Image (cartoon, rainbow, N blue to C red; front, side):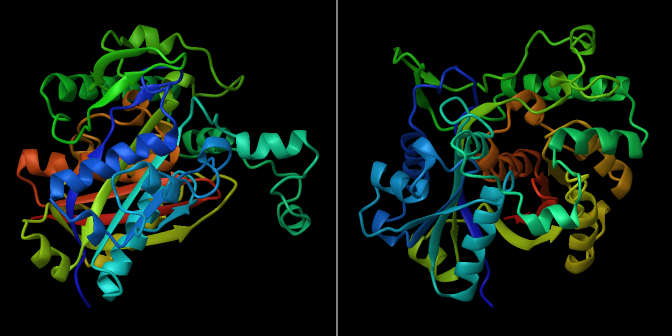
Amino acid sequence: MAEAYIVAAARTAGGRRGGKLAGWHPADLAAQVIDALVARSGIDPAAVEDVILGCVSQVGEQATNVARNAVLASKLPESVPGTSVDRQCGSSQQALHFAAQAVMSGSMDAVIAGGVESMTRVPMFTPNALPAKAGLGTYMSPAMKRRYPGVEFSQFTGAEMIAKNYGIEKEELDRYALESHRRAIAASREGAFSEEIVPVEILLADGTRSGESHLVDEGIRFDATLEGIAGVKLIAEGGRCTAATASQICDGASGVLVVNERGLKALGVKPLARIHHMSVMGHDPVIMLEAPLPATQRALKKAGMRIQDIDLYEVNEAFAPVPIAWLQALDADPARLNVNGGAIALGHPLGASGTKLMTTLIHALGRRGKRYGLQTMCEGGGMANVTIVERL
């Protein structure tokens, strides 16, 4: 079977809710990343055979196949199709897996995989809230309710369950959140994100155009202190998690260009990385966010690797208990985890986060001269994708 290579990887800097990207229609924002991937790789736009984009809230401005709409908003020709994927927070990571599978099978030679989410313009839970308000029902079917009687699936409940089950106290969560900001601050100041970020014009929700480019992740709190983080109120009474130890609401887009050997030969470029392993796993939908732990263990076994073989890991910081529990379960090195900070500091643009993390991982491997990187993230419904790449 052919190999799958990543030849370009890019993302926008994250925008806070109502912040510097709030004026961007999500299809237009995704188009900015698509155009950047084409420009950076030098590929003939007509040679792109598909665009697969992850998006969680596929309603309103993100409805009617946002991937195809992004193609039509980009410089790609109309001949390039597009399709949208929803694997919850792992949507664009799954888009990468689909793209890799396409080029490995030989059915396609060059595919763009990515994601987009404007959490300002299409707020979280909108796909559920609008139909419920209109009396159109809920995703919970009678059969699901019989299987999980009295259960209200909630990521917040899952985060608290993980913290309790793994003995993670609030103080440890607070310290972890501060470290996420500290690493993001250092990475930003050192220019670690400069090669991966696509400059886009600052466009505010009220239509204000500054004429300046958005280049710095807006969620980073450069004045973060442990006292400030510790003082944030609990999400649930008697719980351990707060908004400060959870991922930030974020607007953003990201993407990678994936090719096989024929695509590489046609492009005549050196790849950034090779897909070494990819898998996905379902797990308990009640605790929900624990899936990355067994999924990573299984992925390493299937890949014939140990955690010690992995140089850097990106584990999405949906809530601080997730990466902390992941470190415990894998007996992994904290110094290799989210080395440039994570979603607590940088934001979590839902459907865009998968290829956002992959973009950061590939560039971090390159900057540090490391070989293997692993990416995983928890997903609604109790699932997790795992991707291992080899930097080339």
